[in-house]
Length: 344
Image (tube, rainbow, N blue to C red):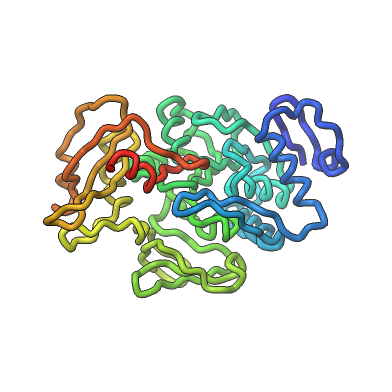
């Protein structure tokens, strides 16, 4: 297999034997080189930094055997006939999502095209495996709709994808999968085929269950065969599939009614074209009142009838237009820091 950089194409053997990489200048390219070298080193583990979107970033050590298993069960799920012959990396390889695309390419022996992470990737290939984040999906729809009319396979992760964009992708030739997982599980542990299902399918030998809060817990090879408890509220369909509802730690208690911010955002995103965030403020009567933050340099009009789809206590009691949200290094909206920035 080959790894294609901006100014150079290298074979795996050239990387493993330490060829001088005279044309590798950018950080993301060097990171890919390091991942390949570490994968073929004598160490039986690799280290990654978590995104920090739901807490403090930390270093996670993953065994190569777990990463190999993750790559194998993913590729078996999305490409059982081994028709995918190349992959495109257009997200950061510094984090688990990008790093695992490199590992999947190595495990399958398919060519890897490395691009600099950008909000609008410039992808010309067809029939490739591509990892993207929702922001890239949104920007690409705005700039190059025809991209989604080609039969590439998309792995979409890093943040929830709005229902508007889910419905858009359903009617395109692209094969889109939303991922569910975390650094600790060597990226995703479940996939949702947007074209055919609202449910996530657990991969490999992963077992699923819920706790008393209806929050998902997982056990299998990708959790070292120990139960891993999450704060994600789900509905269990069967022993290996579930529907994701939202984060329990983000739930807003307004007048005794539990409001799930992600669910409200999914409704409102259909009308509001800008990034949005549902958060809350203390209220003497309701306990917490729902606030809608819209990322925009200046206020703009939109059809407020969209609020009629929401429960009374889920409807925003205040709307704020703010210049810029706070984002994590992986492109997710940092909900806590953004709310603190504008609602002090």
